[in-house]
Image (tube, rainbow, N blue to C red; front, side, top):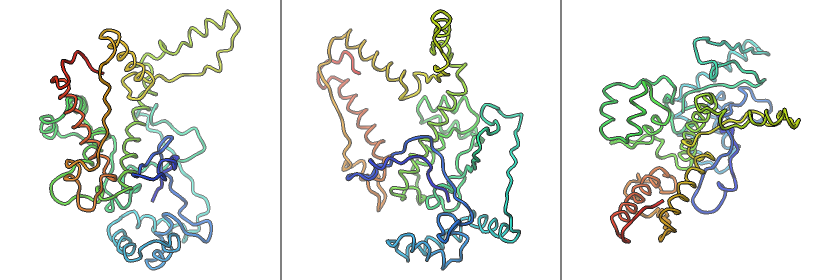
Length: 350
């Protein structure tokens, strides 16, 4: 019922070879108008039509559709997807009462963090819908609840999970009483015994879900850095104080310098993160002299570990989580082999 609002990099998605979904910009989703502005009915507006007309409109919008498959999907959604009833009810209210103007009143809760939950200052209205099923209808046909900041962590679950998890995850769970967005998406992507959810059979749509999940986690980390600049002691990095002192002597305008947000070196991909890795590499090379081996490693979608992990009908191209997991395990095995002296005594490696 909503669409991706970011810029999709078509130079990557439309290239030959394995499909890759890539986006640019801040992630958000768009929901169109409930009532059509022209004779063409699109997106969520189709749900307010009767069953036969819905199928006909979808056929007109895409001539390559398989009508039998689309009819089965449409019947499944009408029977199990609750938001369709909400859309139809809203449409009936607007049509019967002939509502021309709808006002939205925003209420601020003073008990919440005003840096995050402050009132809007722009002229745009955002609809916040936490359920994943609104964004990926076919992957969550029963409107499974998505992540929200108040999912509690049970003590028994915490103790059980702490036995076989990484130290980073155990520390995150130990210091929080709620489930983080990253842990929630890890839970969604974990394969369990028994019948599997439609998510793992989504193909290219599964890649979009994974990208959405990653972008959500990254945006929350960026938002934390933006609202906790005092914790990061950003004033020590900005240099605005020195520029202000310089301005008093040389008459230079510091207005264009603005306010700079600082990303710490712990944020993967930030300039300070890259600079720290570069300085570590140069320090090691200066102390141990130039390296003797320069190795690169690529993934092979035909690895037996990948093929045996696929469900019937799946391909390695549409399962980047499995490919990444197998590659990471083989990468660790290669590093362990080198560290054990396969090429000789190892003094250090980058």
